[in-house]
Length: 289
Image (cartoon, rainbow, N blue to C red; front, side, top):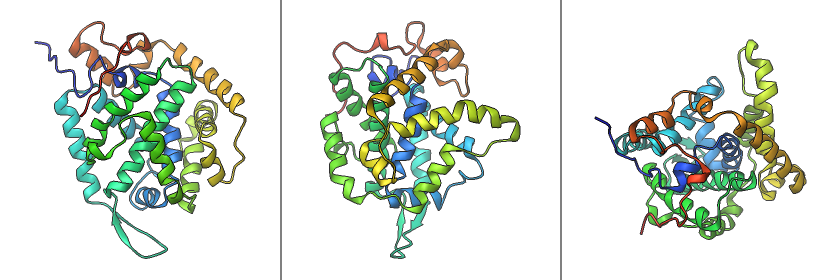
């Protein structure tokens, strides 16, 4: 008997359609560059993470979490959230300037990570030509308060539309800086360690994704990293070219990649539920009060 549980978002959501687009790989890397600009947040990663030794494993675990809470059953999503909250509760970091120890589940840090991720997904998708209207963008930000809840945030404290998300960045900007750990993350993302046999693939494929993602960062991020912001028009052309190539790969081929969350969801819910920009809701509804 088919389990018809649509999960937290379901096929009628903007999230369901958007997260199935391959440009999310570029958006996800952009989010990591952006998240690294909060000194306390990035230290929470570098002081606790094995990303230096398990580069691809960390990236795939992050992608798998997003896939699971988007396309998995409600129970699977709630379990994934509980697992993340449990990990965060056990971790802490030390501010090298003050000696203060703080938990990585500090709500301010969780909010920064969430907002940087959601803003990156929206920015890259829209700039790459994905057909999101302003109403779709607002609905997506609202829907993602469910994702924020899963990692331990109160949805009432999380931006509910694109304007609130933009105001959040204006508020948090004075706290941002390019600490030494941020540059360590940049070096890792631009050239993650891989076995020698995979080096040509890293140069040919990953380097393009990483460089394109960095180029799409907001002007303030380039300035904090000490870089001159690239031409917006040239960056948009570059992004759209890369996105076009990625979207040219047949969806059924892309969705075969492990762990196959989309194929599992379609198998669970039936034909006609696979993500597609053609299935974006005409009039997105508000998810949370």
